[in-house]
Length: 314
Image 1: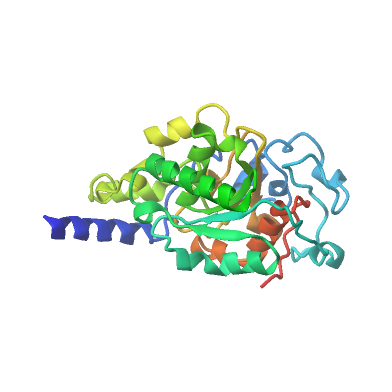
Image 2: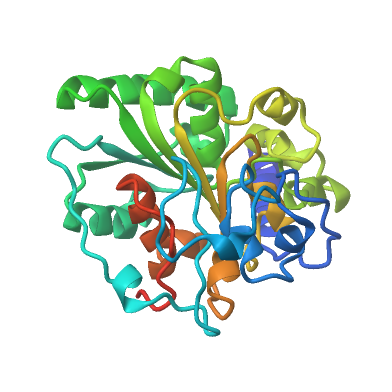
């Protein structure tokens, strides 16, 4: 019986790692313009859902900040690069800046997040990595309860009133559940998700389609399936509660979040499509925690700067 369970789980994970490019994309739930959701425009997806359609994006001066939690939409070169003055702008991390917690995803061992944690530490942030209990196979709601305890420990040990969150994949759902239902809205200042299936993913549904049952018994996989009760509860009402600065980052080459628009949030979140700024940048699901361009977005959010990805960052 144990062998059958192990084989089923292994088969399920194999399916999750296969690109789902043949799946028809559902409409992006965010309020961005059609051009932003289809990927036909290189500029439309640079604004937040709150800004989309509200103003001419070309009217914003390069590097000009808009309201907190939104992205400006400056002109950019045909190759997607930003002017040197924006890309190389000096920044500093305040001594009392919020501690940053990097939250892992499904099967995300902590060592896999050391590269992005090392970048953050080198830039002056206080950083810790949270590995999901049981590597994220269990109930996401239970993982969120454990995460709440971890946040409390970090706040107590650092004396910080709030923490900032950089969450990958399933970690973005764990963090959102904590913020929305477990009091995290008062303890989180900034939230950045990297390739999180905020509205679910067809890849999880495919596991059932190919005859392996409901995600081969993996609870978190079931909860990340489009149409799950878990996602209905998480996405019911306000996507972005509290005074948190909400930002999502996604990539067209994401193998595990399909349609890729499902990695976005509504209700005023800033939704960044890497290829909307850098059309030639190739970044996969796991690559989001390694990619230099993605990191420039993370750093800009954590330092409250306008979002302007550096397309040439290593």
